Structures are given as structure tokens and as C-alpha cells.
Length: 122
Image 1: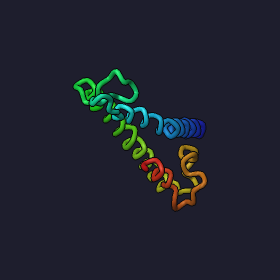
Image 2: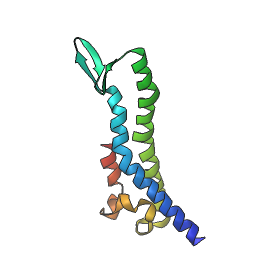
Image 3: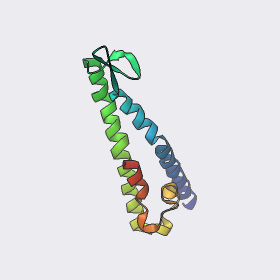
Image 4: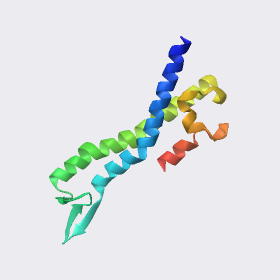
């Protein structure tokens, strides 16, 4: 049982690190769909100047892909991790919060364990 729990902690810790490291790049990629520039009186997507902004196709991509991704990746995912961390802290205390969240809390005083999320949400 202890080996299974240890493996679970390490796997969840790895997933949290992957989410944390990819978080800014995913958000930047989704925000690029909103980045337009004006050329000759028309707006074009900065990433691909062949795509006109605010057309039906561009808006469909913004609403269908970028907006849900921003909500899921930018708000919901970090919130779920924070809630899990708060729950785990209340169950076992800060000193035993474990391998799962070590990457996020190392270097912070116990009363500021949530600070990495303040940085993420900024």
C-alpha cells in the first residue's frame, strides 16, 4: 500500500510540474488568436497575416478553441490544484503536504504556501 501511495504521489507531482511548466506557453498560444494588427485599414492575425480578424472563421476559432482553453487552462486547472493543495494541507498539515506539491511550495513560509498561485494568476 505504501509503494502505491508513494507512486501516486510522485505521478501527481510530475503532472503538477508539467502543468506548471507548460502553463504560460499554452496561455500565450491561446492569446495569439486574439492578437491582430491593422494593415491597409483591415485587421489581420499577427501570427498569420493571411487571416483576417473578426471574420466568421476567426471568431469561431476564438470562441470555440481559445476562450474555452483560456478558461480551462488559465483558471480552472490552477484552481483545482490549489483546492487539492488546501485540502491536503488541512488533512496532513503543511509539513507533510508531500511530494505532490513540493515544487509549488518549496521556498515559501508555511503561511504563504498559496503564493505560487498568486503569481500564476497575475
